[in-house]
Image (tube, rainbow, N blue to C red):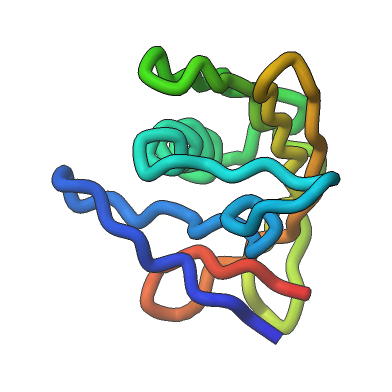
Length: 117
């Protein structure tokens, strides 16, 4: 199953939309602002654009307005159903709490990266 990654930057880059747990409040979740999502997306795109993929490389992001920051690390590259895929670890620091998420993203025929479950 795929979830759309269709948040667009003014520069025309496609950003990953983050999992629902980053948008919903809860004791084990963190809510990200639109500015946070832009910063995360730019960092993710910098890793997704690299060919060949740079396994183990990280891209840091931060948002001075919210004080949130984090890193995205490219963990693995594979092919699934004839699509190039990347497994990435997303780390978010918010209010001194560190949150970790791992996602597999696959590039579909139109060039967009989608979250694959």
